[in-house]
Length: 417
Image (cartoon, rainbow, N blue to C red; front, side):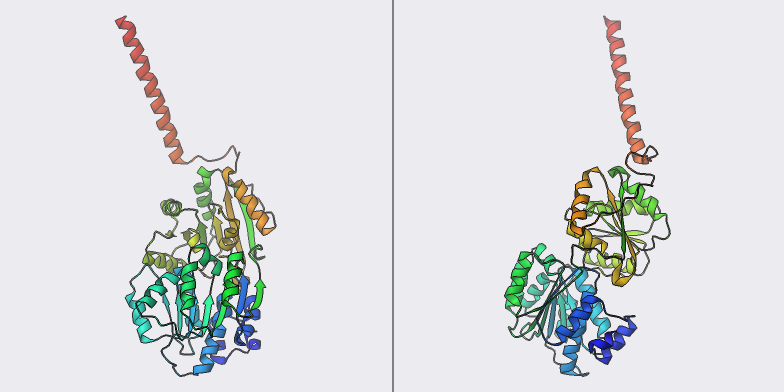
C-alpha cells in the first residue's frame, strides 16, 4: 500500500484517482530513499513503474517546502529524458500525481516551435522535463535559469548516451548548483554509465529491480519462423483475431514502418506509424489515437521502444528482430505492464536466426516456436502474395516474348538464306 511509504494525502488522493493501489518493487524501494534526501542510482527495465518512483517523492519534497501555496517561479527540479515521447509521458505523470498540490510542470523538446515552451517558462514552473538539446538552446537564450535546481533526474541514462547526448548532458550538469539531490535511472549499467554516476552522484543508494537481462514473467513470448516475403501476410492473418485489441508492431527501419502501415490500411486494419521522420505533431497524433483506441495498431521504430507508456497494450509484434538483443527486452516491455498480462510475438526469417540466438542468450531462456501457421518455413501450403504472382507473370511474359522474338528472327534469317 502506498500509505505505508509515508506519502502525503494530496498525492495519495491523486494516486487513488489513477487506480494505483500497491507500489511496484522499484517504487517501494525508491520512494523512501529519495524522500530521505539521498542521491539515487536505480537500475530497472521499462514497464516497472520507475517514473512514479522519482516523480512522487520529488512532488512531495517540493510540496513540503512550499506548502499548498504557490512557491517562487524558480525551477526547482529538472528531469532529463532522451526522447520527446518520454519527456511528454513524464510530464503527464507529474501532472496526474501532483494535481492536488498546485505544483506546476512543463515539458520542452525540439522539433516544434519554442514559443509555447518559452511562454510557460516565463510564467514560472516548479518542475522542468526536457530533452537535452532544446534545453541547452533555451538556456543559451536565457529563457531557462538552472541556478536554483534542487533535484536532478536522468531518466533512461543509457539511452541518452547511446543517442550521443553525453556532451549535452555534461554541459547541462555543469550549469547546475552542486548542492542538489541527483537521481539516475537506467535500464542497463555499462561502464560509461557507471563513470557518469561516479562523477555526479554522492554516496548514492543503489537499487536494482528486474535487470535488462530478464523479461517480465507476465509476458507470454513466442516466435514464428517465416520467410521474409510472407511476414506481411502473417501479420494480417494474426490481426484477424479480435483478441489482438491493441497492438504495437516494431519495424527495424522508418521505410519499413511506413510500408507495413500502408499494407495494413489496404487490408482494412486501422494503423498509423511513428518514427523519427514524422513531424512531432504527426507522432503525437498517432500516439494519441493509439492511446484512445481510435486505431488498433501502432507501427514503430525503436524510438518507441522506451518512453511510450500506453495502458493495456495487448500485443507487441516484432515484425523485424532488433540488431541489439537488449532492445528486444525494451520492445516487449511495452506490454505486460504493472503486473498485467501481455503477449510478445516475433517474426524470424532465415537471415535473422542469429539475432534470435543472441536474444535468447541475453534473456537466458528459449522462446517457444509456433509451428502451426499457414506461412511456416517449408510449408507446402504457404500462400504467395498477389504481388509475387504478378511479378512471376511479368517474368514469364518477358521470357516468352523473348523466345517469340528470337524464333521470328531465326525464321526471317532462314528465309533470307
